[in-house]
Image 1: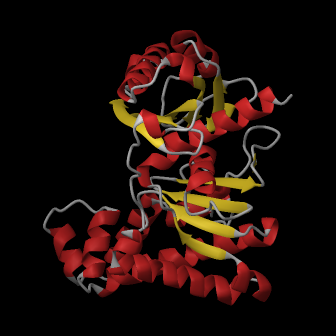
Image 2: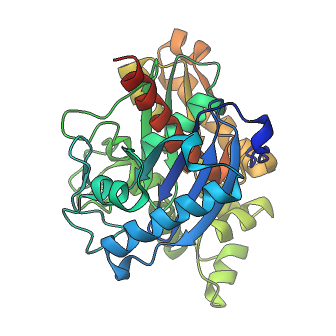
Image 3: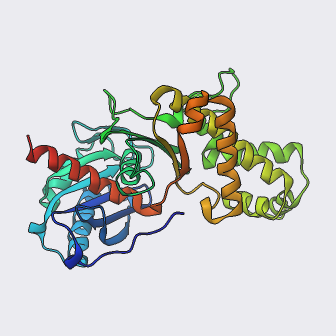
Length: 346
């Protein structure tokens, strides 16, 4: 079950501390995390990308200071800051290249600018990788040695963790598994990246809404069709509500989404052979807390069993993430902790 970990008091924290920053297109989440991955504080500010990247870096730095004060900590108790950011990026250079969710933030040296404004060394990481590391470190993957995490939302993010190694790739494009090709037809659905047939074109929120509109055009009956005809906005939440209430088309779309997702999961299982595959993000149809979410997971598992090598199907854990919206900043703090440890022992 997804949950928000309780913040512990500074007296219970194991030092040193780390600050995680989760940069999103709408909000920036910041929190202080101790050496065991337990949060001491959390806060959120608006990204306001139109104000530009320099303003964003400065406000992130101010939020870092605010999170430290909120935790009751001092700056000398903080070893490092971690920053998880949406791509595209050059991770070794600390650059944002051309992030779709942050228009105008092109070729910006975000790591160096945040370091200048906050006064701490900063570890820079892809946001999906950071969230995956959070789940690997202290979430549902904490007992695993290797893990793949799909973050299902407007798009599909992914992170691959193997023995504390985060798969970044030679060009900072490792684990872009939302862009696995699951449909090779020339007329396959268009992904937001401009290519066709990608997993994201089927299983992201945008992809699910597109598929639902196409289905409604063919079958304009049922409660979802009536709600949309009455002017209600079609979203995954609308779809989930009607599926829960028994609308046949809505349930069909949700379960077909699970089957498409399972194809991507099997591709990663056959490539990496991880201990576990974790499903997180806003579009898990309620996760374990909802009957629909549990059915969604059950169908993913069923389709994986049908398509994967038997030994992998039997031994690979497939489950929902547990850290909820905290995964990003906890994971960013975790990758800062990793770099601090490696630097200390170098």
